[in-house]
Length: 383
Image 1: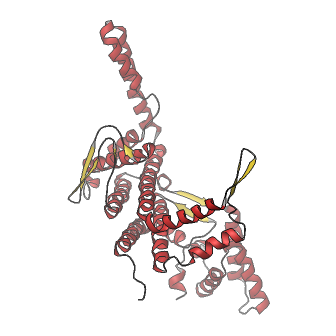
Image 2: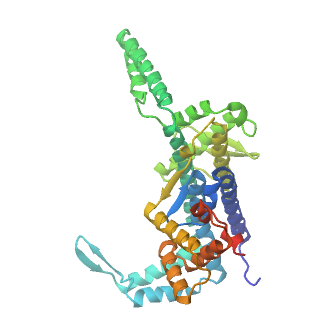
């Protein structure tokens, strides 16, 4: 191999791929048929889940780091050609429009811009990578928060009503205490009343409700609920630094994982090795799966969201049935061309069309033909 790549970045790429592999494992094991459908990347049918969202988040960091390594391996040689193209062909004009007025900069400003861009690629990679991975960690926790909230929101209203009822009882007690107290105590009681959240249900409340519903014996076969709650609380506090440009304010937090201690100190950002960050946030994947497996009779809709274009699915179904049920054993080139063009309009990929037709030629006619095609492993079937 002629190109030498940065060992540290290779480790980061490998760790990110392992995160995707963890999602791959859980999707295959939990989503079954829909896992195979997702692998085919149909543009008209997709099963969204926490695992698929984590893969998408991970892809952003993979795309960034892999592109950096490729660019760096060829010494960013196309950079000057790209800049020249931008300027000579009018993609960048060194002027702006402000409040309706066109402002043209001096040529010296253009020289400065080009110099700044060169400096960006030469000296600021680590700063930009830190920023990108800050977004990664925020997105990871937000994904976890969203899909945990979806489980909570789909559960019986009884759990929500019980939570609100408990708060109402606290309001009633505090109001009664306030009415029966002297002036010295009223101010403290009023402060307590104002801190109650009303009917708003926060993420910690949703999570705690769900963790009370899980089968603790099942959950703790592989994990510890109290440890996981501390981990989630630590990562939530870290995610909330997005509101303060990465700085943490409030009480200090600390957490131990894999023999290392991580801290969030008030007035400071969180410092963490990138590989450690991937491992730490990867725990959310296992926690989420453990929650799913420890909730009795959880409905599929609680942890998935099916996105499909019914019109395209119906057309696709008609195409595959027309092709398979046709009594003809041989087609003319013109007929094959017409069939492929019709498929191409739906799947938008000529190679995939050929794979579909080969697959249909191999299998027997079945009642669930559409499902067989949607979930087919074309890499195996056509190898």
